[in-house]
Length: 218
Length: 234
Image (cartoon, rainbow over all chains, first blue to last red; front, side, top):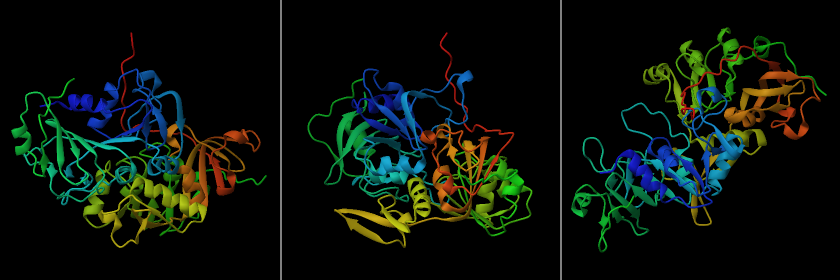
């Protein structure tokens, strides 16, 4: 089983040179730590910044410079600032190449649910619905099962949907899977020491297993 | 040039009535109109509707207006940082409309730009689409969203001039420029107010035509929600 850091590390291998990327809150934020230095990529923050840098040192904290998680940040060389309408024009207009975000559930046709649990206080969807409706490539980072052991890879989402037919790839603590255009989770890689049978047992939606499934390499 | 200057926040918000439809700039606590919020707290008004991406925290920003029960309805994209908000919502004292963040930004932009409706892919297939017109363009589904316009918009900028031209700093810009344009009366508070002609016209973000009142604010707290630091390299 992978730790959260290892999930982030594995997702970082999906990043390609020259991409503009939006990272969601949680595990996706950790991906930034594992993107190889030789790749030139730009991180977008939907509150109005292209070129997110590392957290500031104590003497460089600026309350006027935060990310979408409201954390204090810095800017890298070549950064640019803009307003929220411009920011979502970039997102909806398809200019952001890759969106990485967390999820509570993903269905076998690529629907995602990650904003609302009935009976619990609803905090809002923030920018998630705009992001999943628009990005050309969406990767989900999540645990394979919920804390009570229920599969989060389902035939159909049971929670309120954030977006339909949008998830392309999922990296969990157990596996790397792609969503087939015809429906179903195509198993691509196993976490070290995890068997196909275990993944099968923990995937409620249709799992497609073709040939030998390799272990992830770090 | 037209002089838009008012004395202070108190004068700027003096005629906002109960039941007013307001917009307030800011993302989290960054770029919020701190002085106007403080001045509103001194007014005996209620039943406000406020369009703002977030709803402040318990003891700062819009949270202060909530605590005084001055707000009837919030129109926001994310409201998760405020326990008093949650209490009022669950008890039915407060209404909330949750809107995808990009849709919120575009609805406000459309309001200022005179576009009554537009189509967006955000929310198709979700409960956000309920009751809205869905249309297919070039093989993809979109839903229709309406503009948002306000009686008063309260924005915060870094620098401004007496004509109402505004320059923002960092990510404190966020919703402020669109809200300036979408308010029938836009009240701008700035950290530094200069005479018209002193700002470089090439660097102005919001043209003064959108701003009706401007004043230099004071005692900005600029509270930080998530203070995240990295260790200095030794």
